[in-house]
Length: 273
Image 1 (cartoon, rainbow, N blue to C red):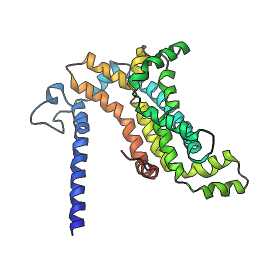
Image 2: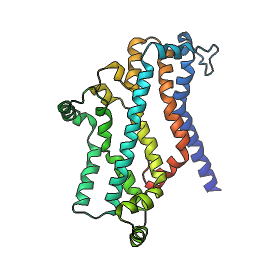
Image 3: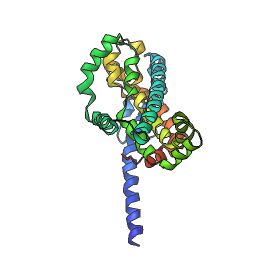
C-alpha cells in the first residue's frame, strides 16, 4: 500500500513537471498562429480565436529561411556522421583494445568536458583563420569530429559487452575490423540511435559557432538566423514564434521516430541526465 502511494506520488510529480516543461512550447505554437494584438491577451487563449497563417508566410518570405534551413540540414548531417563514426570507433578502442597510455589519454579526453567553449574560442578562431575556414561551414562541423561526451557514452556501452564474445569472434577467424563492424557495432544500435538524436539536436541548434565564424547571411544557420527576427520584428512576437516553431519541427520528428531506442540507448550506456 505504501509502495503504491509512493509510486502514485512520483507519477503525479513527474506529470506536473512534464506539463510545466511543455507549456512554453505550447504557448510558442499557439502564439505563432495569432495576431500580435492577441499574443499577450488576458485571459490567455491557448487556441486562437482567429488563426493568422501570415506569420509563417512572413517568416519564410522576408528572410532567407530556405537557405538557412538547407545550410542547417547539410551541417547537421555532417555533424551526425562525424559524431557517430568517430565516437563509435574511439569508444570501442577505449573500452576493449589494449594500448599504451590508454587510461591517461581517456582521462585527458574526459577532462576536456570541463573546459567551456568560451575559453577555447580564441585559439580555435585563430586556428580556423590560418586554415582559411572563416565564413565556411567547416568551422561548424569539424569541431564535432572530437566530442568527449559522445566518446564517453559509447565507451560505457562497449564496456558492457562480454569479452568472451569478442574472443569467440577472433577464434572464428575475424580480425579486429571484422569484430568491430560485424559483431560489436550491430549490438550498439540503441546507443547509436540515442547518439543520433543527441548529435542531431547539437547540430540543428548550433548557435555560438555559426555566430562567431559565419558572416555571410546566406550561409548562416537557422539558430542564428532566427535571432535576426528579434532585430527586425522586436515588437512582433507572433512572427518570432512562427520562425521558432518551424525550426523546432525537424527535432520533434527525429525524436518521435527514435524515441523508444533513444531511451533504451541512454539506459544501456549507464548515462542519465
